[in-house]
Length: 313
Image (tube, rainbow, N blue to C red):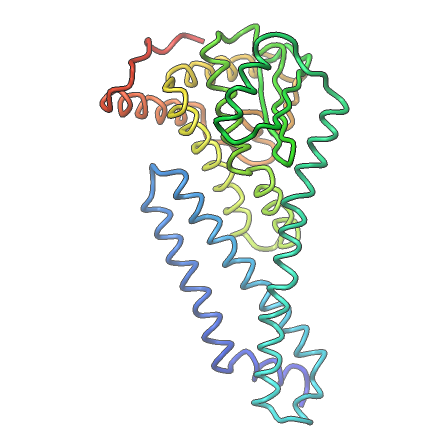
């Protein structure tokens, strides 16, 4: 029997067909669930990561199935077709777990720590009350080892990198152009990213996205996760600080500053609170502000202290 014949028998066998059918139906169900949870970014993120796990599982299973069909073609002659198919099926399932899980764990813990250490080597800590404010807020987010670093750029921006010792980078322009409440909400937004381990999770998706460059669903998942991460961090910041309109105002000012012609000096490295359209299309500032205004109305109805009207950028 040739490799092609054996692979055809394997992929048309009952356990293989059932496994692939379950993976496909699970993915389809998760897509429907994602569309249903329109204004719940944290639940949508859980659905997206489950979809990502299903997609990776499917590709890993297919790849190892083909590899073992080729490597153990001789099993067909020694133990017969049914037993050979069961053996290769079991090995493919086991190998998918043994390879995907360690790789995911390595990327999750290694990449953010490496990025954070490089930033700590390159940037100084700022002086003034912002450090005390950030570290005081960090305790509420479970990030007691937080380091705050200062970028000398005049363009307002902020971004965070998780890890064992998470880092929040803020620019000089952020303090010059934003008021105290706006800075507080921006810090809360970045601490939400740290709390949710967004750096590590984004790194996993990016790595698999490069490996599976031919899969359009991976790119769509990567973009969707990127978008929902921002919506989720906005919501957490708004609920923790009770100042959604201050965050909306901060987004307007940061957007204005980065589009004023000085943004080239800030190449805010795609990690900015506004994101970078060169890598992945970020959610629009307008949509984020609309969501924050909806949250402001919700908080007001729940009895939270009202904020002042949205400030002009």
